[in-house]
Length: 315
Image 1 (spheres, helix red, strand yellow):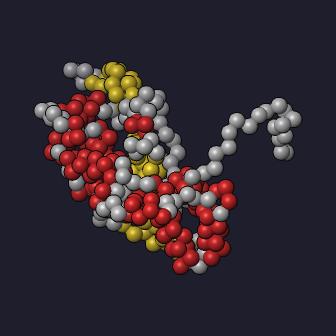
Image 2 (image 1 turned 180 degrees about the vertical axis):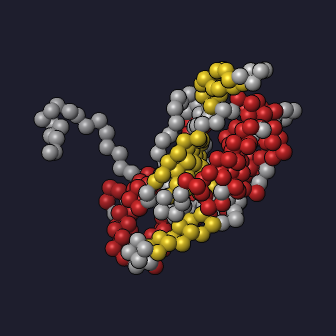
């Protein structure tokens, strides 16, 4: 049944056509839920002592640009967990018609990380080889990405990536899809607006060391979102995550929250106290992975949160 809003005295308040960023997100997330059997888990560690150790990382630092944030520390925590469970850092090639699959595990951890840019726009950037970096190096890499984003025209860089993806689909025989995408991006009300003429020349005269390129937003090996950085007051946890193919896992770090936790008194008896809990959501592609593949990841995080002083050696 189609609702006639006019007859029901409902007025349309606005109409907003998708920009290229939302087009890319909507296409990739739709493909995710159409093709991937998601299995999601929520891990809820007590992080009271861990958060105290995080504060110690900045003792004596007077340079705001060198501050190591808890967001960066959690990025490192997940990277350390994936080292114990390497299949999480992989791409899947799967042909459903032929029932053939191949899981490709990588040594470098290229993190697809949603980031709020200085302009207020949300973009998923590819932070390359984060698994081998120290906390200081990770901080520098994130700050450099933010710096270059200030000189970046998001429509231009996203159109480059979209065009590459479209041409890649053409190589794989997806002719109709290619035609539809080109028509949708260059015609009518939904046309993607990119730079032209002198504005385009001026933009591409900016060195690539001073702006983001398609290399910075291409597909990573795994996606890690920090929902706690978007709204620190959120009470709860994300329960579903999109896995962007060909990736086979995705993670979300939720806000730290005060909650009752079980502890031991001086006699070793269980007691209830108030502490901080930071839920971490993990999603896996069940075509490629089983719960057993994730267990070493959880065990590594158990070890880190039980001995949070270890993060001082990551600096």
